[in-house]
Image (cartoon, rainbow, N blue to C red; front, side):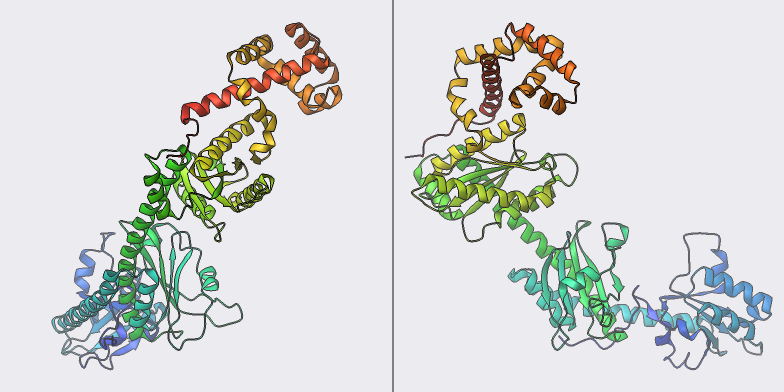
Length: 576
């Protein structure tokens, strides 16, 4: 599309004062304030009208050219007072009119206007307020009509691209075709979504450009406005002129569009046109980003539903399993290990937990691009189903799962914090293997919290609990654990139980246990004597320590499996 030749505006959409000076009525009238010719003018008011609203703080003079008689600034005192007041109120230009028969110099007013950088025009007698205000109004309306016409052409072109639904990169290419600028589009987190070089422009590093943008482009009130800046992507190179426009949808910032001008400083005509392209482009790119977000959300919900049905074995029959598995690229005959990720930042607290959960889920999804990895947020955890190579040696498969768990922990720790835990079950085959591995991973996660295990832990790492799992479900085992631990828990508020566990963990080393608990050796001895009396056995003996250790492990297993059974059913067999 060809550029419209008539669009020349300032950033706020007004006419530059310099453009008005090209009109025959105002030609050759500038006497001071040349550096302010880029100031925008949208309307004209007489001096008497500006004085009437001087007490209203909401009625400033931004974008207003003030028409005043030369008699109002005849003396140096009057000139200083009038010009100072109008400059303070941000008047765009001062139009000093000489009525017929009046001859007054503007030396004092010119000095004040020059010092303030505000254009001062000496108007002839025929340029009265009626003629000048009509001229400015006509120019402003004509310029607005040109902008609307050009904007509708830009909007129609971009809307046609949007209707085809090719994605954000195609929208960026369309903006490049309209503006001949380089275009960078990023999301609200600063992640680059698209980058298109301008034809014939010098290569620019988009990541360096993003890093060089002003830090003030955040989620604040100013973020809802397009700004112009001159960052320096290459510290040793020249700056570039950019237009940074927020991509807003429903008042929420979805991202930003950055247009890189081909020249610095840019041509005023081109810059005005590019502002129009930026305004319409950001709006339609926001619609495309919203559409893609909805598509991704639908895909994630579908994948999450499939993963949840998979780990719980909730398929009506093998036909339903096969149909949904084909859609998600799941090999029903493959071997899989399930990993469960937990962290305090995944709890539904605060405004950002959902964003963190989505970012962490996507990171886990893309961690193993060469294999099948299904992820979903289930409850306050992230579940990752990893496909492991088929081997005859189960130990090798478990080693593969352990290595993936370590990688998963390293990748997610920057997103979720230092309290991140990853637990995984043993690999299994098909849907039944996934359900069994998930049950083991959840059990491992619960035991890891109770036993202060490592932040990355597998079912095999807690083999002693696995060996006791079936035993702990019996009524006799539960009764044994309850009767063994109850005397210590009644005595001293349960403090003795912690002391005995520390003593057993250090293999009966009194000094080491005292150091771990921060107690004096004599205090430790006293506490162990009290525990022995409560248990009615000498806790220093091997048999007593084994009984207490066994009771504690059974009690921990009972607590964890009870909570787990309340949340999920035991793994079911594969549908036949």
